[in-house]
Length: 277
Image 1: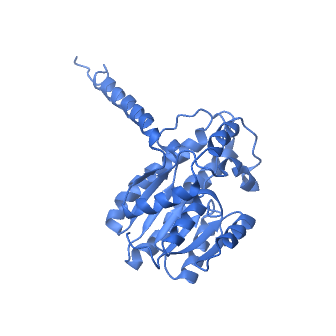
Image 2: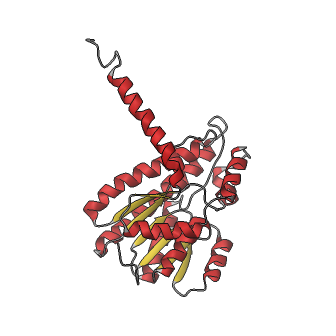
Image 3: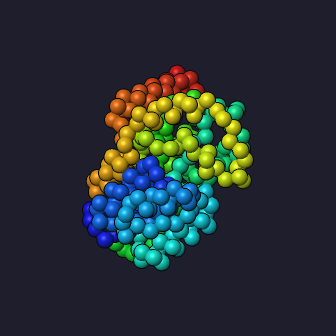
């Protein structure tokens, strides 16, 4: 997509942080935007603060398929079409793997992974049928490329899954007439470390874990979410698969692939693969 004026965007996790940054960027491009969020008061406050007649809003729990499909129905009923879908809502559940219970896993998977799946399933058929092109942006994390921080197993696992999903979706889009990108931000000034405030009762209580302290310190000094929003617009126009907010992480990615290369070399010389040697 190169032309945004008059087009429609749908953004989850839109009441604050990166989601709100994307909403602002889309509005500056002349788009209409449906803002979706689970937090009603924050969503209403964000809509009021934008002072724009180009925004609409809908309450949405992305971990629930019916909620996402209802949000899609409202978007199409009110705005007619949809061209950009940003599956951005995310939560953090810190803790070592033996500290995290079933509720932690189900909540993290439900929002971070299945929320993306639900958004894709709800909107992509409409983007295809419209025949006007479109773009899907799925928010992962640098943790979806590195996964190096102890105490974030649930979070890292879901973000790796979103990267893999989007890389496959990128290839599907080449056949289906739409683009796809995965946003892998580093530290950004958001409230993700306060995510338990929106944890549904069905997932049980959140037990305080030390990892939240670590991430909050990094995030408070992170990138302005409005800058991330502008980067997303630029990346969509450039048809970039991976949207990366912090080039300083490139050396760590290089190290990861160096380890993979070393493991390939080891395997090539292993006794199991060379029984005749």
